[in-house]
Image 1 (cartoon, one colour):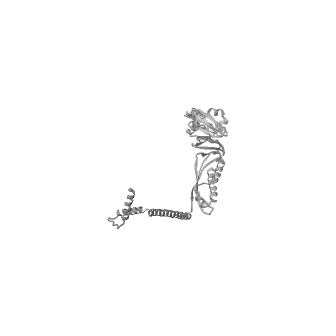
Image 2: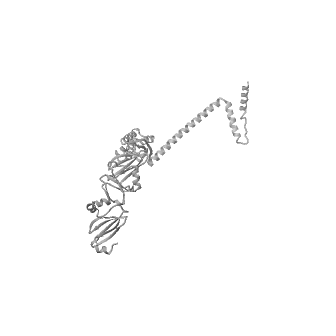
Image 3: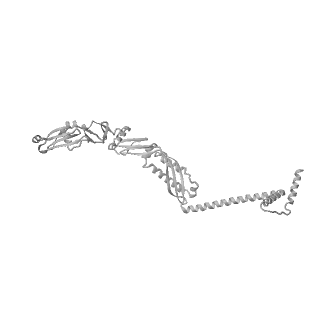
Length: 384
């Protein structure tokens, strides 16, 4: 506490706690840094300024920073830790073995040494832009992820890593991390698993000038991800357009009847061209299938009538064939009976039996006399 004597002498007493440090300014001129304890300072005509800074906020920030380093470099070195990074460098700053912050390229950080102890590591990211898995996890736990990019790659895929637009690496499955360090870091994930591409609703004008719509399907997989990503803008779109163009040309040279007759079949020459073209950009095409041929409404009605007429004609042919067979069978039966009167009588008897089962009484006039005599005669001949 400032006493009466202090006032007479033009001095002021200032108490700095253990959790503080202070800049001592008198008449606008920086005098030094005050540590913990009580200080008696000149305060002529109220020109004393004491700028307190808490050690809970370890970064040094003051309008007098440049004056401190220029006029009192030894004082600055005693109380402050300075960390600098150059172009393409990052610095990991730790206190008590815990990550405090990460500096990007061309940055400067001034810390109170008394808030430490401080340690730091400066990394040249141009030499090795990748982070180890351990460091990536530590930075993630400390929520210091602003200086790097995480690239996750799932099983069955690869990722192409681009730095400032230049392909630098092909990444296998796993989690990867890379320092940005003033660069633009991007990635493109390529799925290597077999996939299907559908081309639907494509209109084609046939040779006989009928407009139809077709649906195609192709199975493919990427075998060279670098070629697939760099030779063309979008390899999937390239395959889609190849299927469109080739099959429009193929089907446009055929009549509707030919297309319907070969529905589901794919021209071998057309398929071979697509496969060869896609192989040049690292894509392997396997099965190509013409799934559907969709006709306009009026054409469907006409074809339905044609099919119905064809089916009716086939049915008439079958009926005539059956009638002819039945007639031929009756003729053969008649010939056999004409040559064998006993069989004819047996047929008569079967007919009488069938009729007798359906009526109460049946009267026969001399109908079976001849039959009985023939039966007795046959029996006598067999006995002899």
